[in-house]
Length: 354
Image (cartoon, rainbow, N blue to C red; front, side, top):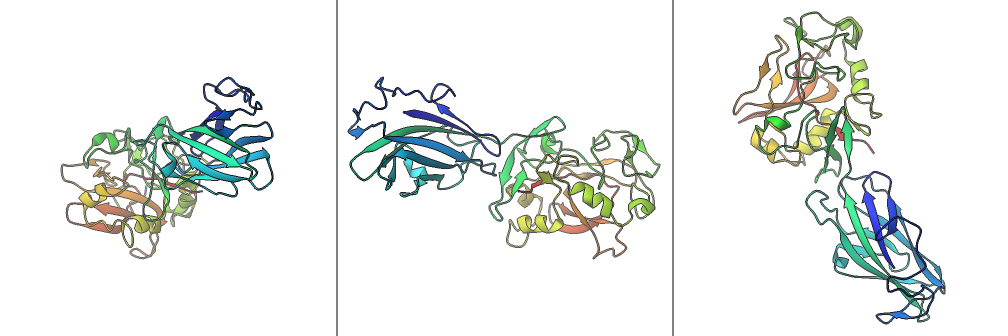
């Protein structure tokens, strides 16, 4: 019997026969009934030994198929083995039939389909084989009309969006404008202000949700778009940006990272970036998108210029008054951890939370 297993990572799994998703047909691929006792290439096929496939949904954006093959009938001491053109990419537990990929497969650039033959024997000379065609499709992530891919960190194993929030595509280069994305003022919702050409306002907001989607510029310290009496220490806005239910700026299951999570990936034991070229060469492919200035709302993007990323972590080290937020900056000859003005417009890259 030939089975097609459709895997959409982090989504509902559909399992069916090749050619459709109907109930299993009792007739074999060669036209003989499954209980005929005749042989396929020397392997007996009997009604008392029937193989079934169940799957688990992997929570990764690269394919890490987890499947279990179970058998009804037989002697109770069934043993499993693998064959087929892609057997080297998989492993199966001889005693339980648990089938897994040996390593994550790149769903965007890898093979579209994997072919295996699984054989189970009950120890009495009775065995049955199943041909599996396994398709792994990329995990689709959508937010505010933009569809994202995802990347897996080679350092921490964590999952990140493959581009900045609002970007039309993942980056092809340091100065690929299509991958710059939006410019968020820290802690704000996606209310339109993040667009690089949004209108300007000089009036501080008195609520977490300004009535108009304007970029609020500030000409005096602490350069925050929100009145300090509303959320001076940033705790309310931090909670907002840490939400994973889709109510904040990141897609469902994702949130704005802590600065320590950026450190883990890009400093310390991670990519150890030293400049903007290193930032682009990292698995996150960070562009030099510049920023929107807190003091006048102007967009600072230039050839060879820097890039920035927000974190969800209010600064309590450099500026103990808590009126600033830690972000990442990188340019031609430097990388910095710095408390940025909350009225600055800076890019955001979201991280997945299992």
